Length: 357
Ligand code: UD1
Ligand code: UDP
Image 1 (spheres, helix red, strand yellow):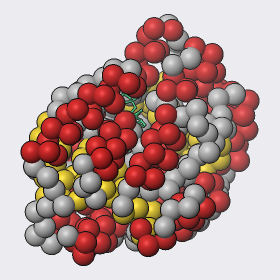
Image 2: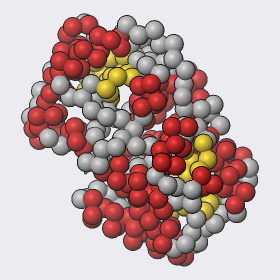
Image 3: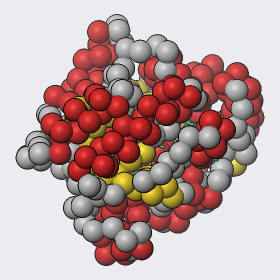
């Protein structure tokens, strides 16, 4: 039996193919939802869009400081795993849910599989980088999406026999849902946008939104880009960012700010955007897979494959750098090769788990 731990928007999206593969291969599984994300548009909407079974366990941990949240996550996960010990625990990505799931599994001597292992920004000021490193080093099976992430793990002394280069499940989810999104979603029309003629923005990283100068520079950069290219901007805003925009009273004039949208709506917005500006990990990958140019509003990335294939440029938060990066990317030919795999990562991961059960 495999226990799939998830708790945030990107984990639900990227674990969906693993859940689908468990069903396809008739492997017993349970879903443990930590409740790190809990608002309808950050959580339940993805279970609906992706036709996922309801979680077997719900911890309702919610928000808090890193220590508070991680402590509650660990306590809740431990209770479930002690009472219902699986053969393997799977965690995905780099959130506090992943940190807690990995640590608890390892301490209970339950084999831990880390989906999306080996990503490194080499920036330890990011909470996610700490989570990635810790979880990679306590995991028994490391599912690295690319050769580069496999190489990162080997460099850190992780045994090669534990590492599997599988591709990223983000591709599986995207391939499984893009056609449905194109057919079903009306998000472009409903927001009075024209396909190929708008900019899509997301920003939510703590280091970008929790500090006034940083967030206000990014918003100014986006407004400048919109002015220069006469392109409307749509910005489905993460709740963390909404909170900070209000707190700092930053004007978003000229930007169409909406609540976070469903996965199908977001895929449609991405696919039809002229360009994407983001600080999200998953969105950098999806832009690359969808052949939509991307400007990343960060100084570094744990997704350098996207930069290497020329799908993405790092701009940081300086408005001039954001406009300069946009100038390069907006005229890009979008003819790069997707470095994240063939869309069968979920099945590979489940086959590997099964071979160890
Ligand atoms: C978390 C992850 C981040 C990931 C992101 C995906 C950590 C350390 N961070 O960041 O790596 O990229 O999820 O979106 O694990 N909030 C709501 N409703 C929700 C969830 C959050 O209103 O459903 C608000 C709360 O005010 C909360 C804040 O957002 O305090 C931050 O939530 P939290 O889960 O701590 O971190 P994220 O910024 O979402
Ligand atoms: N996403 C979504 N609706 C939105 C914004 C993003 O469905 O309004 C999806 C997007 O397709 C991607 C994932 O959320 O798969 C990225 O999550 P997020 O940016 O919150 O986290 P990160 O990837 O940075 O950890």
